Figure (cartoon, rainbow, N blue to C red):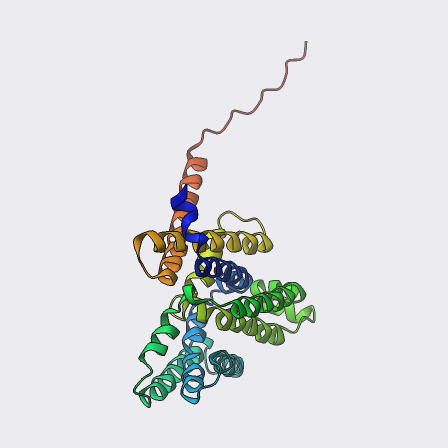
Length: 288
């Protein structure tokens, strides 16, 4: 069993494992609502929309996390405002913000001749470079994500299934939508420096989507999604160590593979249940 435990005897792999566990727990609540509401495109747009803030922070020599938070706040505000425009569909507004923020980020990057390495880290992350202070930040982000998820659960449920009913119940769906965008932004900002913006959607979307056929409640989806994310992190780091592949990409690829495996098994279960013989009804006992 040395092949299973040897990689995790190394300090930086241990930190990578804990970082992936925390990221999985952060992404599970936000990712569940993303999947239930069909907001995958929004998640993709917000992850790429971090580029201008991160690029500007790198050029100014300031903290990249601060730049990511600013960009996430701009994207959240933009999506919220454009979503209230009656003649503009939400997808159109998200697409415009996506292209605009990404273009601005590329323009900022083009002003620097030595930004290639930082840009690669932004896009693909470096899960093996997780530091102790990163784990503390992720733990704080997890606490905030759980608090928002618990406090806003009722409003999020109503918003996901019937916005008009949410308004009737006085749950303020517009505010709930803005808070949900903030939760999504928190998950992306907290995760981008671990697995990168191109790969963060792997842990944000794949585990909740894989959990849907097996969980019986929204909370069940979140818990199972977190467990699947942890499994993808452990397995991805293990495969990366033995195969010499990129750790973050391997973790995300394994998360996506778990999604396809989950739905394949769910399809087989459904087919078996459909083909199972129906037991004959019991006949009434004879009365002498």
